[in-house]
Image (cartoon, rainbow, N blue to C red; front, side):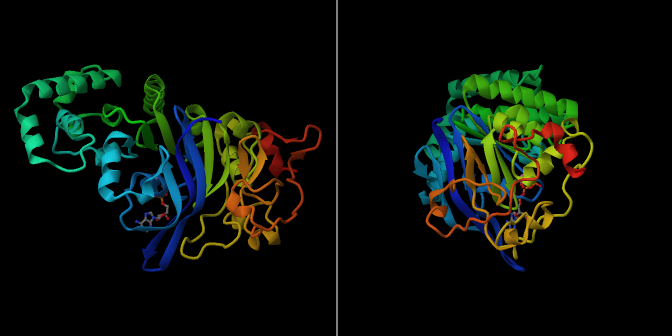
Length: 376
Ligand SMILES: Nc1ncnc2c1ncn2[C@@H]1O[C@H](COP(=O)(O)OP(=O)(O)OP(=O)(O)O)[C@@H](O)[C@H]1O
Ligand code: NI
């Protein structure tokens, strides 16, 4: 067991929409240990960004009817906006999906970096401290030096020039490096990276991800990594949480998840990674349910090749199937992973064994043979 930095417990997030209440996040649980990288993986619209925005306190229009977000032992949902804002500046940083919208186009890279250094950790603007900073050349020079050093750390070859540049003057890869530099400037304990490579071409993406990996390793930063790509999650993370339609359907350490994928959705995601599949059965048919009228039992049942009538009737509470491995599917037996499901409201149903079950060693065939599944 690691040392938890962030624990999300039974989190629910709802939005009021003109079609009714959208129950987007439906009771998710996961833990990020200090010094580790945990991934949230799932297809577009499954609620990854909503989850991280809830953690960072960036969801003014949402309702959080239940749940806890425990950061360093304290439920941040109990804090005031000002307190959360203060923590966001120092403790938590974020790298967004699209570097163009998260950089301010009218400020130079340097101005944006100096802003971070000046205002980190300050919840409210104080005119006297602002004046003091303006007048304090020593501080400004030190901040400038620190910012340029950080640009060097993200392997930007002409840091002084980039410091003076506007975002529009930089390539996509450079902008993403600048964002990483800005995110790491405040030396956060938690870095949230929401698909940091998506806007880039594959080669640049790989370089940026490698760089990020090295930087957080050196600094012992804990990372919550958001991606739709299980292959990327495998490269960057120690622990993977697979999300489907606002629920965590499977979670395990990365090695275990790939050695022993259990949830039909996880297996579907795996089979859509070209390098890991035999080419048969790529991807998963169908689409996400409507969040204003979601299935009450298994949210994946309509797309699941193994669904039985019981799956549409009884909620598949997450169960523990191995060391640190949980899966929310009736194909598997195991004690409820969360105490709230142990009380008796969780119905155990028997829909048989997973069709890919390998009796010989009591485990499940690895993803290497996933493609064969759709043939048999
Ligand atoms: N402010 C909001 N009001 C209403 N619905 C919202 C709001 N924000 C997000 N949603 C809905 O929540 C669902 C999950 O969105 P989210 O952005 O978390 O998906 P995601 O998993 O991050 O997808 P992507 O990979 O495309 O970024 C979507 O159906 C989205 O429309
Ligand atoms: Ni997103």
